[in-house]
Length: 262
Image (cartoon, rainbow, N blue to C red; front, top):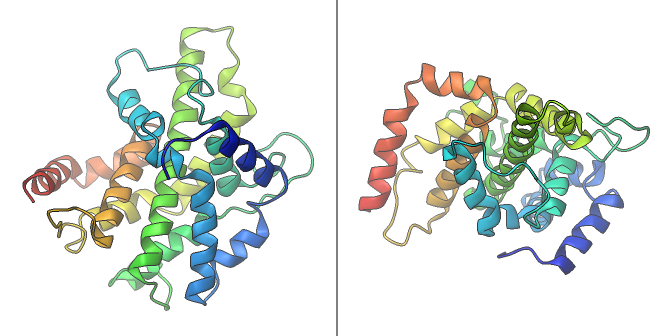
């Protein structure tokens, strides 16, 4: 955890280029053995966690949402590009797979497996596609933080590419392969109802039970899902419409106020 370094980025690039985010990892995530699934989630987290723990990643997302000029155009300039590419590999497979433009590559997405871990841990999971096996809160937290990092990567790449293209009609950034793959990842998240899963978890009673240290598993999960909503609402009309239809703004403001007072 912490800031991403050049050495770490090289390791992440090597893992991604050697199919480290492919079918084998997806199989670990869907394992019924809790320890095996945790191993898969922890490995995925090790590839993308700086997107959450490094202020250049998490802080940049908030800056992009509030900036009137669209923020920075260059998605590579902050030193976190390797982690964002790893997030895309987890979401849509390797370069050349789903959403890719070249031949070869894996098209296996880890997103459905990660999202199913969150669904299975909910008390009312049967009503919104959850599985029969309940997952521990510890596993849900790691899966949730992985999804938050992936959502930040998607929001950053989509936002930077579209902003760049809007300003410069001669700029092909919006058609860059990373943008295409990020849009593919966004479609998977929307198709899996990630915005609904995140909103339900953020507004659940357990996630709203903050302790003074704000370090309980349920608080961490709630915060991760809040990041997911922030990232998705910046680049997904489906997510924004879902929040608007549920009049989510006032609810989320109340939750934020409760967390500050806790």
